[in-house]
Length: 302
Image (cartoon, rainbow, N blue to C red; front, side, top):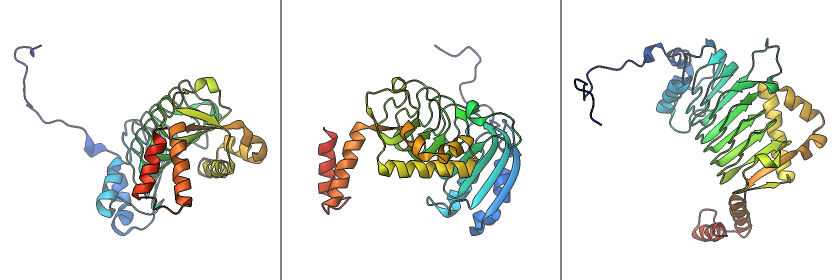
């Protein structure tokens, strides 16, 4: 359908995205010692929901100056209070920790690339975090590495296409871990419908899981072995340390009783490949060699 008569068919004016007002300009300025010399920096600021993609420009500056490996964890430690706008912490690299005392909108941690995001209610909040929504939909979409600790529930499509990040949360909506290919997810609360649909890699540990909420096409539900138990406890401890979570505290008070309440959600093809890799390494094969690759390909074909 042709454009209405008189409508311009080319760019006739400049767009104004308001980037000069971005909160990240203040973050970049305040993080100067870290960006220039790698020194540890602590920043405290308020945040509002008009502040979108907070941390992204800061992450760009860090990566531009220090490369893809970033800086040591927590080199830039930012504490923000208030309600964050969409895409809080998007693409944040290693070396940046964003701590939000409040709540956030959709796409938190989108493309997370090694950084750490911690979200919890303000310490003055009177409500129980685990029974309330703390952040929106599509959190950790396409994340590749890093950590997310969320004290409270979140919306739908949590960790969709996550390929390497670790995330702990206290409840998720529908379609959690959809198309996930790697990483680790811990759910310390309710789980919505269609969990693990298209999940081909990574692992999820879910408290009091209702099997009917899981899409069984690609995954199996398993008991935790000793390795899983140690890994899970470590993440629950870290969640408590990072967020002061009441849920984590209660679980840790009697861990032996809490542990059987968890179910491991494991992609079955991924499990076969991991088993073959473990055996091949035990046989002394080069983990990056052709024989290892041949065994993995054979296992993936079932």
